[in-house]
Length: 58
Image (tube, rainbow, N blue to C red):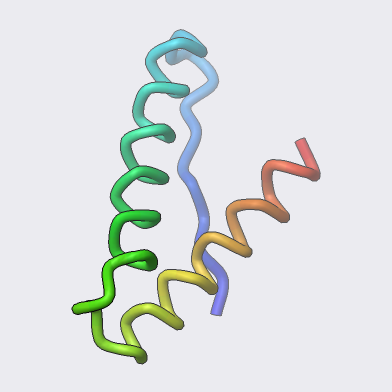
């Protein structure tokens, strides 16, 4: 499974950063919440790992 963060290079970087920050905050909340089902937590953790790999490649 791979997640892709769509980028529009005409979008101001600050706006993109805010959108990415919102997405990351949402994912972190789900992965750290003890009431999140284990399968859901594992899926979101995979999404975060994909995001980290993509950001490292930029």
